[in-house]
Structure formats: C-alpha cells, structure tokens
Amino acid sequence: MKTLLLIDANSLIHRAYHALPLLSTPEGKPVGAIYGLSSMLLKILKEERFDYAAAAFDTPEPTFREGLFKDYKAHRPKTDDELVPQLAEAHNLFQKFGIPSFEKPGYEADDIIATLVKKFGGEKNLRVMILTGDLDTLQLVRGDKVVVKTPKKGVSETVVYNEAAVEERYGLKPEKLSDYKGLVGDPSDNIPGVPGVGPKTASKLIQKYGDLESLYRNMEKAGNKFEEKILENKEKAFFSKELVKLLSDITLEVSLGDLALDSSKNKNLIEYFGELGFQSLIKRSLGEVAE
Image (cartoon, rainbow, N blue to C red; front, side):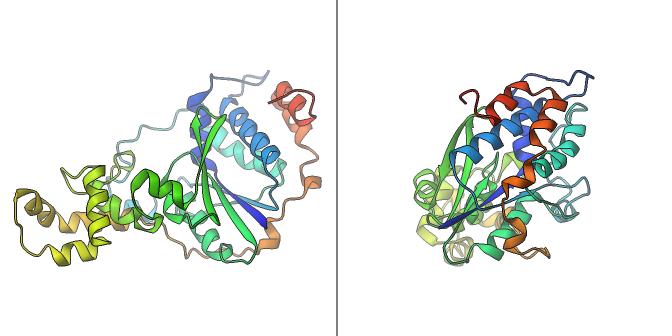
C-alpha cells in the first residue's frame, strides 16, 4: 500500500506561527512559522514513508464562499505583518522538500485537497493522509483509506482521524458532517447554522433523520418551540451546509506521478536551513540529534 500526503499549508503555517516564539534570521527576517512548518515536515516524513505528496495553499483573492456570503470569515483579524512574508516563503520551503504546491484563486486549500482526494483517492493500493491544522477536511475521511492527521498540542503532538475516530467524536460518519454543520454552524468561519442548536442536538438530529433534507421533510409542522426555531431557520441551515461543503471538481492538471516524492529533489534543503539559521534542523536532518 502506497501513501499520498496532502498538506493544508496555510492552516499549518498559522498553527506554527501562533505556537512558537518569534524567530528571525541573522538579517532580521521573520521565520518562526517557517521553522515550525519545517519541523513538522521533518517529523512526519521521518515517522512514516510517503510515496507521493502535495501542498495546497489559499490565495489572497476573495473565495467563491465570500461571493455567496460576505461575512464568511469576516471576524478573523488581519494577518500579522510578520506572517505575510512567511506565507509566501512557504512555497519555497516546499520546493526545497521536493513537494509540489497548488493554489487556485477563488478557492481554498481545503477545496484543492478535496479535489486531489477525489482524483486519486480511488486508486488501488493507495492510502491518503491529509495533514492539516483544522478539521474542515474530516468530511473527506473514508475508512482507513483517507485519514486526517492534525496537531493536538503545539506543533509536535498529533492525532489521526480515521472513520471510526470521526464517528467517536461526532457520532456521525464523515460524509454527514456538512449536514451537522448546517445545523450547528462553524464559529471559526463565521458560518451561522441554526440559532440554539448545539453540537449534541445537531448530532442526535442527523443520527435520527440521516441528513438535512430528511429532517426538514419529516418536520413539516412544529410540535414545540424548539422545532419551530428549526423550521424558521431552514434556509439558513441549507445555506450553512452549502458553505461548509468542500468542492472536489477544481480543474487541476496533475497526475499521481507528478506528486512522487524523490529524496534527490531535496538535496538543497540543508543549505536552505543554513541560510535561515536553522542549525537544530540541520542536525535533525543529518540524524545527529533526536526529535
């Protein structure tokens, strides 16, 4: 069984930036997030053998979700000045690791990952691992064939979600998470959901009815004030579900062979770490120190 690693670059860079102290090169260039991302990549590439890999990025342009909902992620603060150049530098970092990067104006990294999962996830004898700093891609999990690995604490400890782990956390199969979020919303992305419906109630309702369509089909008349609130917010529930669903049909001209990991491609990595002043990462790369 071969393994394809799909990396949500932006989420990991943000995670690393906020988890680590501010670091800079001898010239004063901020590199704390790049250090954290490099450390994560070294660790995961050492822990598990990957045959293929790709990194997905957001772009500065407004996404199609913002076109549908102007308040999408509107409450998020402006990106720190120290982080902006590191988001750009991360493309160079992945190139040094020999990992191709993908981005598409109007779409998010998660949509690119969903597209790559759809494109290659059905390949025989291929397992897909998604490395991400958030949980939006949990809806892509399928058995043990498509799993999500995410930092649990800082940037060093991680947890892996297969289908059983998703069901244990939410009481639902991964493909039902968009229905679940249609009810409960997603505060991190400013997605409203249905007011007053919390995680436990949302999970029970989707367990009972299967999906939003069936829920509203069977709840044509309100029997109490709670059901009345759910019926009143039908449009909001379906709109929220549409916002959280990941698109998997972006046009990407790429073959699985294009994503093949080749150690000869990262021969300049040590030199690159030296330029950034990452002496500890050089030692780790050379196997001179433990993790």
